[in-house]
Length: 126
Image 1 (cartoon, rainbow, N blue to C red):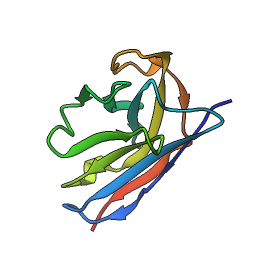
Image 2 (image 1 turned 135 degrees about the horizontal axis):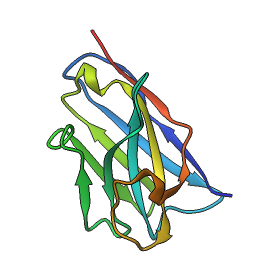
Image 3 (image 1 turned 90 degrees about the vertical axis):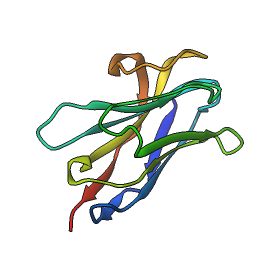
Image 4 (image 1 turned 180 degrees about the vertical axis):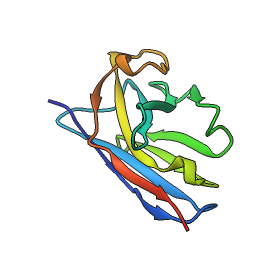
């Protein structure tokens, strides 16, 4: 059973930066498209970013474009989300997820991902 583990969340002031990481145990991220999603208190989970299986294509939600960068390091079997110029509205629990099918394209649809991490809290506040 694949387990995804996020790390790197925390409390940061507006304008600050954080880097989230996602690693797998009992399986691998290699060959799979990976996504980041977030869920703010009282709101539905939403797409943040995805990176395709070979790192050649990425996609971002409009709300984070130009501020967040998704990447992956297959040598470390890890994906990352670099978050810069953070805003209070970025406050949420952030989840990494692995796309269901091998070597598939990026997708913004939650249902296209079958393995999820437990989430890491990001709080942007002064």
